[in-house]
Image (cartoon, rainbow, N blue to C red; front, side, top):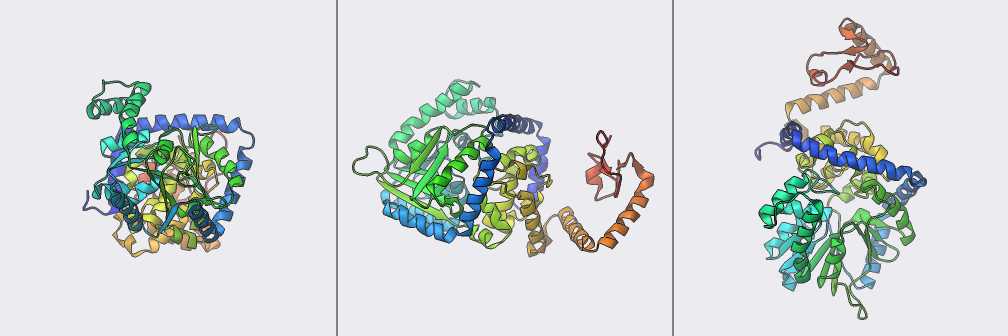
Length: 473
């Protein structure tokens, strides 16, 4: 598997996932319940669409003057007593945090959920300086015990059933076998409590960073994030440059849509506002606070007038739950810290050519655009990245079927620029297909289109407009 090219590995992993009916059942069950709850919560909140518009506009404003807001954020954080480090690359972020741990003699680290830490590979760097790292988000804790990476941006263990978790805890923690969620959660809590009490360093991600006040906002449901940034003497917050918003008053618009879209809740259980290390008159909080602000390819997205819209993302994970591709193959097939539709958009910029094939892992159905709380036009971004990928030298090394598809797309693009020729081609194809059509659909087609008709019928080119009740048989 390692000797294969990334695109080929993705194809192999996807085929294996699709063939795993148990995996697909678990993902379908989890995402289906999420979508039902999302629909109920949205329907009960009349201003939802207006709040989406407001959140998008705030993000648009913030990204358009990102340099100004980051300078303001840094100034405020430093005034509040924080140490701020701008990391251009993942390596710089790892080196800085590992250096802080080494200098302080850190032996035990507790981590709240942080996709940014996953992105930069922080755990291995901390272990390299002698620190023991404990994931404390329940889902992250589970996948860490299994030696896996998260399968979902929001719910890392979405690919597992409660029976899987019960067997894992019995094996790794020595607790009695059970599939009761309350029993399993209590077992994890008991195991992690002493870890929190003895930790030297806490690490979390950041949901929003308010430039006006120098306030970091951490949103979570388990309380482990709050313990991670209040109990250890050293606290490190990792955030991408896109997490900054202008004013504290802007935050409410995001809080209204984030929980509803992410988990179907009105509001998450814990929303923490962190402005700096513990003050002299305070009993809780870290003695030392570091904020690592990461670029790692985001600047390249910012420079692209189309792709910069991806920086609006607030990491709700809803686009994964509606994506027909993700729901079939899960997150591990993507081999990226960011799977699913938004992962297919940001991964090529963050991880480079090894992720350039991911924008092709989409049906372009538009469900991700419809569910996004800030209305990111993900299909448009995927098409933009597909075009960029076909022009890159690495495209010559892709699997042969993928190269055929990209060549076909390029030919269609040239044809579409000439409407008369396109109409003539359509009439010719319609005439050729007519003897083989049934009710306006083709049941079998030659390669490469046979990959489509193996599973579904194909509408004849230039066929009659769709009528209610009509469709493939």
